[in-house]
Length: 482
Image (cartoon, rainbow, N blue to C red; front, top):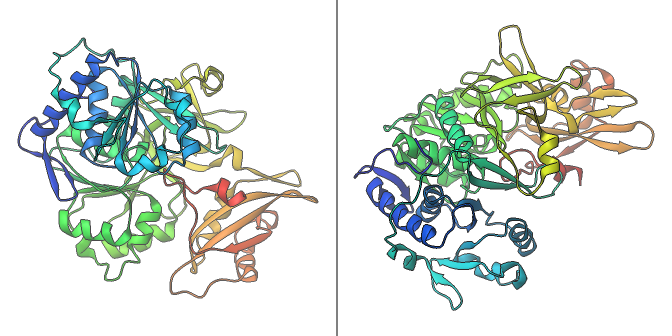
């Protein structure tokens, strides 16, 4: 199987988007035509930047890149002009596919960053841009087979430092990501309907969409999240699988009228990113009748593990390996190292970071984890987040787990803050549970005193209506620090 393969070339529905149904036959024909245009322009091995919303055009562009040997380079549509410019200078794409609703932003990008780039407009017409529709007139025959180790896609991620990183996946590792995802979600089949609200420019939306298409299922695709719209989609499209962010699942429980029937068609609900608090697990199951399956992975390697019914006696269960992933812990640092077919090939134009991150085939995750006597893996924190308070080390996760047990706490994040006397101190950001009286700092301190050592108790508590999230759905701890 190749990344560009479609499992059901026929009249079965591949995509549902904005009231439009695209069959596998229609998608196959569009991909073949666009791939022909890419081959004609000699794009094999060249980046194609995609500044497009979730929709059939973005799916088609991805698949055409994979079929022609071009490198798909999706760009976040929320990028400001300087961010787009940095991405273009890093990637040096031959093509830029841009939607008409981003032209005002693109107009503020330094023209030097666009020098030599073929500009193709989707959803309109404008002088200086070629029309998306014009690309589908090519009839170039299929080219040579794309080598498995050739570059397929580069995902831009700022990580924790803000510095853009280009995570490069080969055709082999990208395909392994999709097959691993399909296994993690309980073996996706042609009978599945998967609801996707996450942006396809990020790995979360990418894997959910293309794992489904490779299996011949139907993807119900939305561009942007709104809790009420998400709930309406559950009742309208009756999906069988959902894989989304923790914050989305928490918000769904607050939509007026939420009830078990909304979730009756689902055979699985999954999330990744940060730890799912036991309290949220219990509440979600009480309302929906379903557990939240938890997966672990990152843009560089996903999925690695899954646990379909996490135990509730402790937060942080990420389960057992899937898809041929191998995990081990560095005995000196406690860092989790992973290897397997879904691990990226390198970072774009950054050999130093690649060498530091990939050692003898093992990727250094920057995460802390442990395996218990039953073979279950548990996420315990991130190396960069470890707080050193008067030489004592504190893992934010253990403080968050304790705080999440408070009945008035909905979500929590703990970070380290510089302190002139103690070096660093933990600081907690708390989202109160709706309908409960917001907890006071004294109340939370007393609650924690019964559960963790005194030196681990946060020096300060901040109540917030919500926690900031990264585009991949993880808590934006850098924003909290700032």
